Length: 507
Image (cartoon, rainbow, N blue to C red):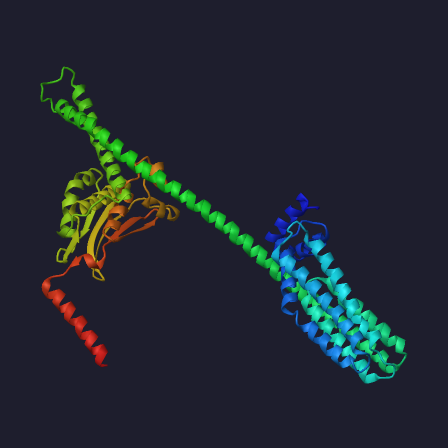
C-alpha cells in the first residue's frame, strides 16, 4: 500500500498551522483516499457508515414486505416471495459486511478495499430493487406506476442517508436504480410516465447535492476531531515533559539546599578559628608586632572573616527557608522598637555616607505576634540594602504603621532605583540588579530573598516599588491575624460583630 510522501506530510503539518490552508488540506486528503495511507477520520467515516447501516436495517425489509403484499394483486405470490427473498439476501450480505468491519475481524484489509466490497454489495441490492419495475409493471396503470416509483424513491432516500459519506457507494446504488427508473418510464412512452422520470431525476440530483454537503460536514467534523485529539496528545506530552522537568528542578533544588547547608556548617568551624586568632592578632593581645603593618593585615583578615561568616549565615537561613525547616518562635513585639534597635546598629554606616535618616515610627500601635529574630533580620537586611544603594548625602525613610488592622513597615531610599523588569526577579536567591553590578556594590543577592522567605513564613507579603533615578521603597505587611489588640478593644470588636449579626437577622 502506498503511503504519504514526506513532502505531503510536511505540507499537512503546515496546513494545520495555517487556517487558510485547511481547505486545501482536506481536498488533498480526499485525493489520497484511493492510494494513500488512511487518515484516522477515514476509518471513522467507515465506522459511521457501518453503524448507520445496522441501525436502519429494518427500514428496507419493511418497504420490501409492503411491496410484496401489494404486488400479489399483479403477479402470483410465489414469484413475489422469490423477489422478497433476493432483497433479504442482499440485506443480509450488507449487514454481514458491516458487522465484520465493526468487529475488525481482518484489520489488514485497507479502507479502500472495504469501500469496494460495500459498493459491490450496494450495486447488487440496487439491481434486486429494480426488478419490480419490470416484474410488477402494468402498462396504462398510472396509479400503480406512482406507487412503484414512490416505493423506490423511498429506498433511494434511505440508501442516501445511510451511505452519505461515500459517493461511490451512493452512485453504485441509488444512481443505478434511478437510471433504471428513467428507462422504465421512457419505455412506457407516455407523457405521465415521462413526468415521473423527470421527478425521479430531480429527486436524485437534489439528494446527491444534499449528500455532498452532508459528506463535507461529516469530514470536517471528523478532521477537527482528529486535530483536537492530536492537540490534546501534544499537550499531554508537553505536560509530562514539563512535569518531569519540574521534578528534576525540585530534586536539584533540594540537593543544592543540602549541599549549601552541609558546606556552610563545614566552613563555619575553621572560620571561627580564623576570626578568633585574627582578633587576637589585631588587638595585639600577645604583644606588639615587630612590623606595624601586621596589625592592619590582621584587622583586614578579621573584617573579611566577619563578612564571610555573615554570608554563610545568610546561606544557612536561605537553605532552611527553602527546605521548610525554619521554625517560628512567636512572641508579642513592637515593630517600632525593633526598628529603632536595628537602626542603632546600622547608624555608623549611615553616618559614614552622610545619609539623612527620616523616621516615622508609630509607637502606640498594638503588639505584633512574630518571631523577634526574624523581624530583626528583616529590618537589618532592608536597612543594609538601603544604605548600600543610596549615594552619599541621600535620604533613607523608615516607617511603621497599621492599615486595615495589618502591621506594616517601609524602608525607602533615594538611590538609583531598579528597572521594572528586574523587580520580581530580585525575590530570588543570588539575583543582583543591573545597577548593583554596574556600580560594583558588594553583596551576594541574598538579602531580599531571605526577607521574602521570612515574611512568607509569617503569612505576609513583600511589595517593591521603584523609580529609576528617584529611589526604591520596600513594604513588608503582616496579616491582620498577627495583630494583638488590647482586651477591651478585642471585646468591643467581638460585641460589635455580634450586634451586626443580630441586626442582620432581625432586619
